[in-house]
Image (cartoon, rainbow, N blue to C red; front, side):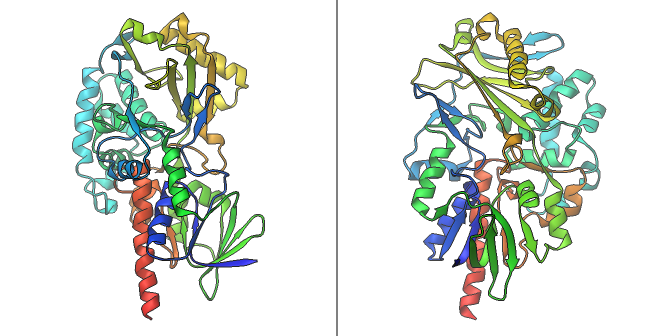
Length: 447
């Protein structure tokens, strides 16, 4: 049976939920269709039998992510500071150091200066985009850095740690755009005072669940297969054969999912179709090794490490404030993430444990739990953390990122100009599109 709404929203991540709440408050009749059996999109919380919280996806908040902090306060979801005991360590030039290479810090300053020139609202109008978007981050670093290993290390920390990609597959401009949207390199890489400053009790999914309860009309396991134009607006059909009629549609899922899961009748215009096709997902695998205690603190270490070589690019102390367990969380990005996915689970785990032992000693060899989350395998995500343009993509399609196609709107963190790639960006994008939808609805009512 066909159901009629003012707006059908596809996707119950933070963008879809934020849009749904905004539209509901203005009296529009809406529904959110979610393919999974949960909300939250690229965040998910797992609970061990003893109550230990494991954040499988995105997990942090930091200064200037105002909307997320406001939502946490509104729904009574507490936050707590990331655990920052002891000093961090950096592995490069066959040694272990207490800080980044001096040349790396100098490169960060140059990158910040270049990022300041980016026009976030109109990226195609940014100075030097013609050169910067045709050059990969890796090729630029090879020209800038005197030391080849430092160049590779910077690429791993930025393209890997921020975009879950290889420095050779993202343009310099894409990197600069992301850095400008997140207030600079140190803001994005930092803990205290940076993007990894705070965590959420229950994980970001706890906020998403509260938003869904407040909204009240999320339908689960609704895998959308087609959005078709009709005389009255649009008809959204799911794989199960359910149909939802609406005047307008908001699509709030990653571009790669739009490309692989949803058919449009008639097809989207070439400029929008090519825009979506040119946004590739990152490749991120997130791992958690849980120990009976955070043993690394005994040596005065924070658990935070960054490596210029090896499968593991970065690791950190992800332990909780009120529990004795020690949790080392670490990441594998880009081609290494894809290569690891080819291995049997036991072999993959053994290789990663060996790297942990090299980093932390024999105490790291036998975790009580070893938890893997490969976001490449999630069919309604297809990769994390977020999507990025292929080199040259911003030149051709940057102006179309936020563009709607008649009554079909597009939200998601990839379209955000503030905190692009983060939950903050997702919420802001959903609220942005809700404003557009409301404006159109008022015009239609007036007519």
